[in-house]
Length: 343
Image (tube, rainbow, N blue to C red; front, side):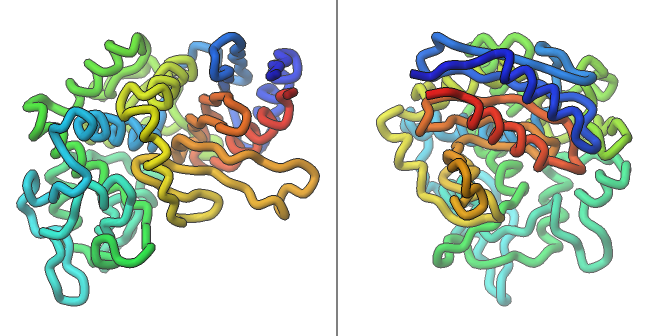
């Protein structure tokens, strides 16, 4: 039987803010049956602090796509070209744009260039600029124009290849808008309301300062131009993220009995694998010889945000360490949390 020892968990979250560059942290743990839960915070964050969830938004966007598929309004095999007519994928002199499917986008097997992390031949990446404190807008039309000038990585769906590409989910925005006839931010905000996520919203106001800005080392970063331009970047809380995560694994978006079909794991970068719309954090036993680290399924973000289900323990963990320069601190913390829970 699971036992959440709250004093022990509070000590772990407090210790997380003793790590270099970690100015605040908040974590929420809940058992699968919901009978036990805990939320703790330290530093400049409180249990109800709002924060930028970063790339956890990919799980959110993927969930909407999965719901459209489960409703029969879309299929994994549908071509992106049905919704987006730009020529985006040139590899080896051949145009593969018409070959990209919804499955390729969800599973990061499209081979498309990454508008965020990849460099153009002439300069730095958008991610490097953000880390340097250069905040700029990246609406989807600008993303498309940048991608058209970049080299693709491999043909869509080639072999077992996968590459984590932010472009994929910006294009999925357009798919959702085409099918629903509504702006992506309206679709997402409506979903949050339906799930009772009262503190969660797509960030569209550049003057919004109601959330704890993410840090890059010792500096708080106001990247409002960037996050308000994408139309799918989200502000939330650890407890609202718990509502979303449980809804996902309870089958709100895609039938619960079919979720196992999403676990077609491909390597992206250690210690993560990617399935169909979901991410897995794993740790080989030789790297944790004294106590095994259980696999965790969900998603994370570059600012230390985490949202994971731990199947072997039937627990859920959400939260953030809110630091882009040291996202590993969040994983060190959730490993300690998992190890601290008695079974």
